[in-house]
Image 1: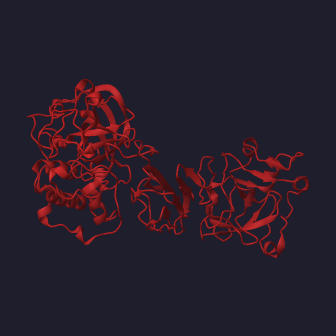
Image 2: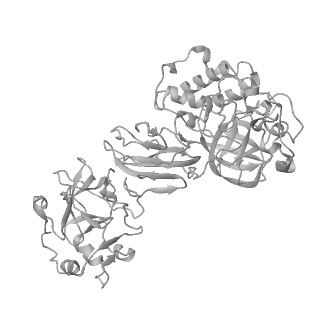
Image 3: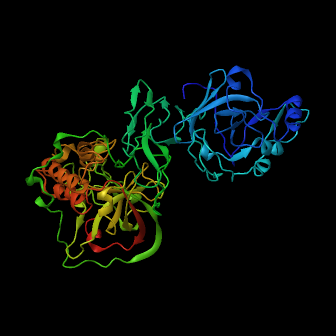
Amino acid sequence: MKNQFLKSVLVFGTVLTLISCSDDATNAVSNLDQNAIVPGIGSSASALPAVKATDPCWLLNADQAYLVYPNGAVTDANGSVVATVTFVEGTFIGTITKIDGTPILEYVDVSELPLTSLNEVIAALAPASSAAVSTFSSEALTTISSSSTLLPASSETIVVTSSSSEKESSSSTAAPVVDGKLTITGSLTQTVAKNAKTSEVKFSGVENVTRMSWNAWWLTEPVQSGDTYTIPASTVPEHFQPDDGNSVSEFFKVNGKDYEFKITISGAAPQEKSSSSTAKSSSSVKSSSSTAKSSSSVKSSSSTAKSSSSSVASSSSKEVVTTGCPTIKTKGGASGTGFASRYWDGCKPSCSWKNNAGSAGPAKQCSSNGKTENTNYDEQSVCSGGGAATCTSQIPFTVDGCDNIGFAFAAVPASNGGQCGKCFQLTFTGKGKYETKQNQKALKGKKLIVMVTNIGADVNQGQFDVMIPGGGVGLYNGTSGYGWGSQGDTYGGLLSECEKEIGYNATNLLTKRKECLVEKCNKSFSSDATAKQGCLFLANFMEAAGNPMHEYTEVECPEVLKNKY
């Protein structure tokens, strides 16, 4: 939205704004004949098709009440034409402009507003008192009908169903939101038709920003200028269909906090939602662990074609620990839904400090090369100038006889507290936190048993940040002593590099991402066979799936994890 005329759009069932209503105007409304032609104002309005007080229309309650008619007229609560609406052909997505040319709303989906008529508004409007302002009350609005059928201005007949009182406003006109040093201008929740444009969203006061997902790959690349980060208006492609439902979300980490930009696509066929989806956390400040992000770019790369030497089968992440699969016993403790991210920052695990260890004792720590155990648990972390680091022996692994069960160590939310040495079973649902592609679907039904060795202020409830070499170092990089090669993107590591090289809508993503990751693991960990096994675990067992959703439950720790803890 290029102007600040309309500060907010409030629809049926929400807090309602005030409208001006003088005594004279109230009398005019009260005396209006239900079959009278709505009077126009000015020459522009007189050219509009006539509407009656009984004609169905949409109620838009904004800086004042507007009645939007499918023939292009927009009146106030007195029945005077004060604006016009221009619809995108074949839709009820319209731009509303005042008679004097001042824009009111761009690309608003009026079909999401309650249906009414001028007569019903008159009946719902409380008589004016001696005060200069009156309001629509929630009780009054419940009397307004939402069952009318509207005909658009064209000859084509479109039936509009009842609008929900819980629908979100589609607008770019939300009042600026101030969140600490950050100011957000434009709506982070929009409803847009295919072939129509989203509205610009601007973050001001930005200190650092990362785009975390590319689900809406058609969004124009955001631009940062100084401390301002702008997501430009972008056209929704005609062929675009969200992977899950009729909406798509992009996630941005700004000043250490996660923000969701949700776009509902009008006309997109709703699909069944996963019961395991979770709400996005409002906070994600980096600490001891680094949450893995879904991706980094939508640009394709010529490097997507991989040689046969980088086949997924070229190396194995299998580690024979026992001759049989351990029995996993549930404890009836914490359970829920969430997602699995990935990291390996090399820092001393939080659970290696004696004060954090709990009944399981301190987690193993090693010297800066990750190979030699360091039993001085008062030693500072390599990430703060000390000599204690993560042991490479704590890579994720599989066990012979456990074809669909993997084992790993992970960080949990710092807010949970007291979970060092606890174990959880993650059962993957086949969905992803930021995208659901072939890779996430291939993981469905597999289980990962994780043992807690670390905490993170950035880790959300239900999230397990799994320790995987090449998974991304985050804000703290303690891997210099390992002698490894490139660790890929800061957030998401080598897999995020593969995602942006291959793209997000390429054919056969499952094979291409796995081949790419195997090649990068072999190269980055050519001098460290143990770390390479851990990296290949993400390609082989985890199907190169970024941020998969899971259901989790607390279990008794199996010996194969306790021996490595």
